[in-house]
Image 1 (tube, one colour):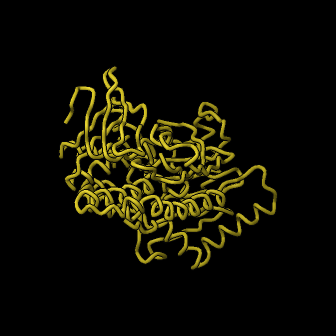
Image 2: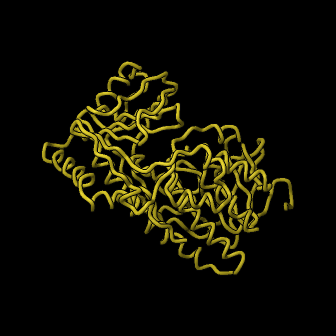
Image 3: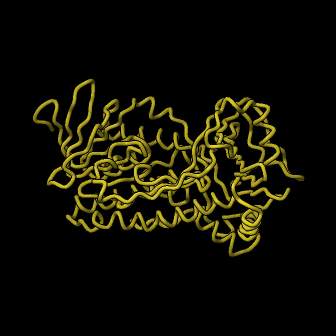
Length: 399
């Protein structure tokens, strides 16, 4: 495989062992395509990173197609609706009913990663942890090169294609010439305080509070652990939020008459995350493909980050398989256009939802009345519920 200990060769180099990189490695291994996955962190770090996760129906089906659904079927929590709370009342959207039976699954991202790591190890996927990619070269040539550092030694991985699945701060995107790259970015004027609590979910549905104090959300990590969020200033610090303040705000923003109050419990984790929408064009340049957070970031309100990454990989993995099995490069040539067409619809939903449910301090009374009218239309009409349900449960993936 190598001419020297410092030079390796493969067909596809995959950067990043998040869900996108691991799923692509798994897909290619099943298809008989040679790939090497490089990850800058340790295997333990990758598996232990805790992330929320709501899987669209298409993502659930994709995991099933890839033979990765056994644990998900045992411990995942199917969801058929979302409970919106505003004006002191509950406004539930039954998206299974409104979308012809489509549902979602609460199955945290770290569980997906656990399943993917096990599958990749079982099939002997070439995964190199603690191997930090430093730069990607020659993506316009006949073969690309990834220069990485492993055990203090600089090595080179030569390949036919590079899949940049290395996240927003990875090196892959920087390999595209600035003149060839368009960046579309919006940073929102608020953040989310994320809370993990040893408390049973009070309701069976993910619950969103659209309150004058700001947005709040209750989701679930397991039948005994709740994941909660509070809108806060973007430069806020988790230490500014005592347990008493957190529970007080959650009750104010989420509790409504006639419904169970949020359950309190030991808070085991809290941190502040900034909120942004981000997209680069194109998602392919030469021999480099971008997937997942390397190409786009969406606000967490729509639960689209993990799903968008899996959608990219389904398109890319299918295209690479077709190329190596049949010599058909059409899927590779169309990758960016296919993914961007879908992603702008995802941004439309996620950014629109984010704007609808959060409080913007600079907005006047007219804009706030319009936000409430949008919420009333979405939750109170058949057309509004159907549009939300079709988008939330997942747009089709053209692979």
